[in-house]
Length: 165
Image 1 (cartoon, helix red, strand yellow):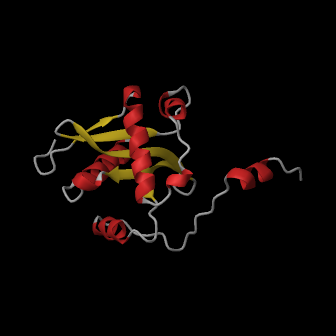
Image 2: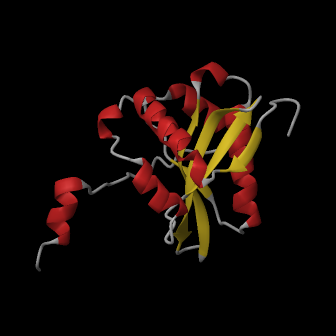
């Protein structure tokens, strides 16, 4: 633990599920997307700690209090022929911003990506989140402007999945 940011980071445990869910809700509120949160303790237990884990979670603690979290998983680059690390969510509680905790979490994740021989470390950011964009650029991250994210969910996903062609 660096004295600069005084943050200890560890892998989340099943007992942390209520804390993880609260971070998810806090992040959704910050992103003005609370209406989209349907995650529950039960499905977090299955997807983060079950037999078929979909993602991993890190928690950051300052003076014994959980102040930030990150959810990440592996994706794959066909061009590189290697796994990548995809950061789904990173959130630092507002009262703890500006102390280097977000950077510490990103450094920790970069080390994981490096240790696991990942070809790259990626994430998405909402286009209105200028403070985050400036921060990420200051770390050397570059926006992938030539790419557009597409998403199928809900009814559209069900319709495509159940279409006979």
